[in-house]
Length: 146
Picture 1 (cartoon, helix red, strand yellow):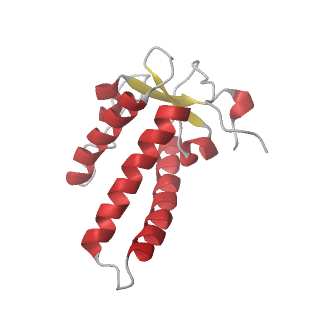
Picture 2: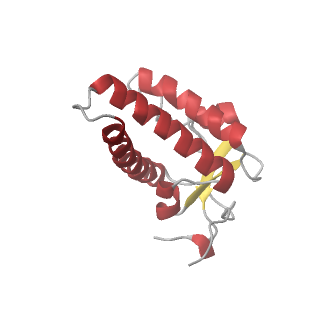
């Protein structure tokens, strides 16, 4: 079995919104499953919404920041074949990943009213990308999974 490594981006085009949305949905499923297991393991009582939501948020934020900061992509992005890079094509770090997700928190508080607003133009950046100076692009062809 191979080791995980940072995937090279294909900088000739930007990721389409559908790929980004599919990756997001896959990541939500992964984090929800992990969070439920953690929440149940932490308590023998019925899991209530407040603590479960906190566990979910901490799990989500940690998962996304570590995965994107270290590898440039989450499991969902890996499956659909996209990667996060800096606007100039370099690798993202933990700071950029954290900024992207902190802006997503604001998006969630507004029920994603602004979260999936993708800026016009060929970069297709959401507000978190603009704040972090990042773009989401297809992974290099040899690294794509689907």
